[in-house]
Image 1 (cartoon, rainbow, N blue to C red):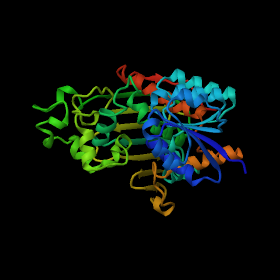
Image 2 (cartoon, helix red, strand yellow):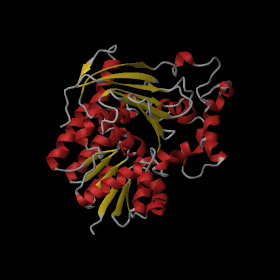
Image 3 (cartoon, rainbow, N blue to C red):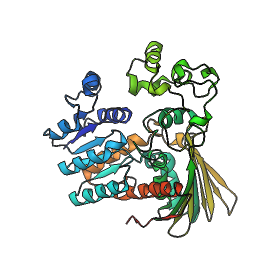
Image 4 (cartoon, rainbow, N blue to C red):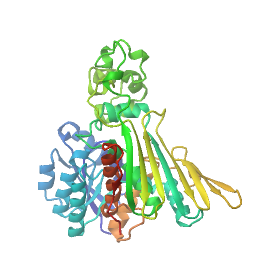
Length: 415
């Protein structure tokens, strides 16, 4: 049987996860090359974990090599996605592309057209679709068990410490460098809303701002870094307290040595010990999005940074019943109006693999490889053609937000 020849760009959290999937599918794939701008520092680790010998420290070297790949996994930072994806398409490579496709809607549409012209497959990593939680909900909706969908309400609770790590101190803190929060964090949710409703979106409005984590709210006597801050022990965002109890969050940055000594040395006046009130962040810490579909049914999404832990919840209101669930608790309940009955779905009855977005990462990867080998595509595989809609929704929401909630129309339609 022919094997799929795979290359990987970006050996960070996501790249390492996909590498582990590749290792489990060696009968179907050949792992041929890895590209990472830190390759000179981490090549030994890459070789030890993957066995790959072709390692490149720049895009130029990766694309100049005669690799004849079937698939490239783009797991780099958001700002590099467009350039790398375009080069892959020009080289004739199919792509698994981390979301977002680009921080520019024009570039998203350009890649969509190029993929179509080249007849190449670009699958965007909207991995929540593949989880048993959302798959079962989708099956119930499509069966019309709860009638016609009238409204969908979703909430993404980011958690105060995740907001601090990724969106205040971290890589996604500044919209000018990566994109707005609604795109970099919540495009998953926009995709889910569209996919579950299975209707084109026509209008969007949105409100939100940077409410709390900003300079004017800094505590009296606070310092620029937690390292030398006199009030850090009274601060919920104390970097030392968080990272010493959650060392795995720093593994992509410091490597496999997570000793107290290594963590303390890394945090000493580093980006990740900056005062959360004195960073160069500009992304929102809360946002609401209102959505209208082509049949005048509606949806809403709330993103909130000030929750105690990360979780998503969902409510779907139909004409004959409703669904309520919590993704992190792996349970949802279906209620029927006619006989006032209900049924609880416990996802642990269906799977025990919840690694990577509730198990969605692995399922997506398996379905993609099978698609490339057989040509048979599941309804979950998120092609770039379909993924344009979630990006349209995100860019419309951000346009509305910065224009005092003005309604923005969406003309794009998924065929």
